[in-house]
Amino acid sequence: MISYGGNPYRFDPGALCLELLPTGGPGALARYEVLHRPADLVTWAGRSRLPAGLDLTVTEDELTRARALRDALMLLTADRAHGRPLRPRHLDVVNEAAVLPPLAARLAPDGTRVWAPGATGTALLSTVARDAIDLISGPYADRIRECGADDCFLLFVDTSRPGRRRWCSMEHCGNRAKVRAHRARRSTPGIIPGTTAHQALSGKPWPA
Image 1 (cartoon, rainbow, N blue to C red):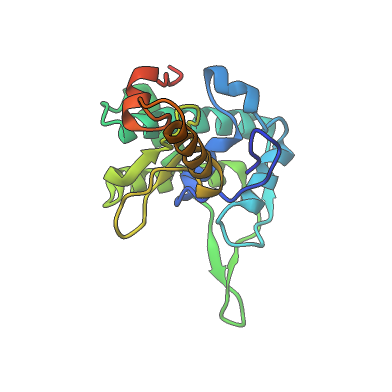
Image 2: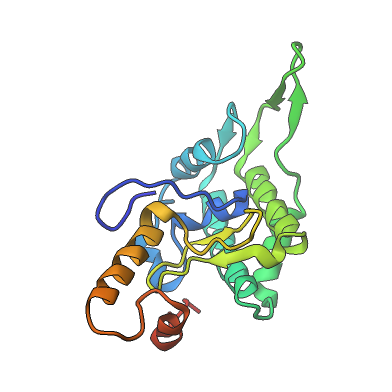
């Protein structure tokens, strides 16, 4: 990931489906769009947690559906993170993608796992959608979090043993919160930026 200041930092959302979310989004988040061409989705897949060696072909229609799935997943997982009801229109997008055949793996002669040839964007989206279904319906459903920074909407699943992860990355938002808290302690007393109280006052609106 790249910070607002142009500095790279590591962000691990903990699930394949959540890795798709930082590629853009609905509403105001559309300005962060990076999936402009089919090749961009191929590039994303190659950088994702999927095993290497995927021979993937993506069409313009599949790219359009990838953006629609990503937007639905973003709003769906945000609702789950905040304990809101899951909206049917978002569920429909995920379920429609998941019902199609996913990416297929096979055994190579040396016993290693490789991808079957002829992978399509449709199969990739099915794999991502099925991963989302497993996440939202599984044991970590209550560990889906939104970054605690009031200006960051990145979503992740907290797989840490104590379950107290607050930030998308300690290198980025976690460090910024520490700096703000330190400055606040040295200035006038009051609500510390980045705390729960500050977020409640700021509202932190999520795109509808």
